[in-house]
Length: 330
Image (cartoon, rainbow, N blue to C red; front, side, top):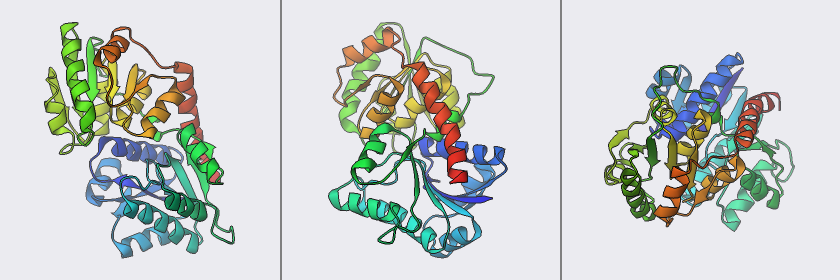
């Protein structure tokens, strides 16, 4: 079976590329083929060994829906209108197009929201199949907060887990438990002062700090300005996962910094610039702090090696794995 998958792929954002990698691998393991809609189809085809089509080309989009048996919308945080109403319009239009062509649709392990009143009404209308109720979408979300958001909108959703939780670090990773990975976001400026202060405090305690830029060209300046012992910048999810797996602790503004930490079994704390970060940490039983966090407090969490509830993390991984079977069978 060929599955067309929409998401924020091909922009070389490590978090979204980690999702693309995991979905491609998991579908292949089950004998299915992924067709990823991408900003950079050539890179996506080469990196993940899948079919890919240009995400903004109308003819390519139509062909991708006609050639596939299903559409998966996600993963990631696609159904929201906080950053752009156009993004929400794009993803809902894809879902509606698949419905009109008679293709089953699954919202696949997304975080949903934040949504305006109008945006929420639009999401509910499309996911519930319009006025007729035909073409109702199977909805799987990656956190309980999103499940509650949809419940308030009258949309039934099943709790899954982020696909990147299923990735594993390479066998040759050399562990340095003295290392702490900090993952800033270049567009979340109010977290930078705290991260810089945290870097200094951790270095005074003898920790080696690695600043990890998850989105080259977006996070690089913020990463370089922390004063870390090492700065790494890459859109490669394998390199990011291996870097995190080798560390002793992760402090992440980037959501997938903490998701990959959970995948690798490394303790973490999330800096919640967006509800999806707090939602993931809550589901994992892990600490999260606001962007104007107290560096001394977070430094204390690192030095105490404060960990998530690993049983809850394991449950999230199991839901993530099962969600592939749900979406394929629904």
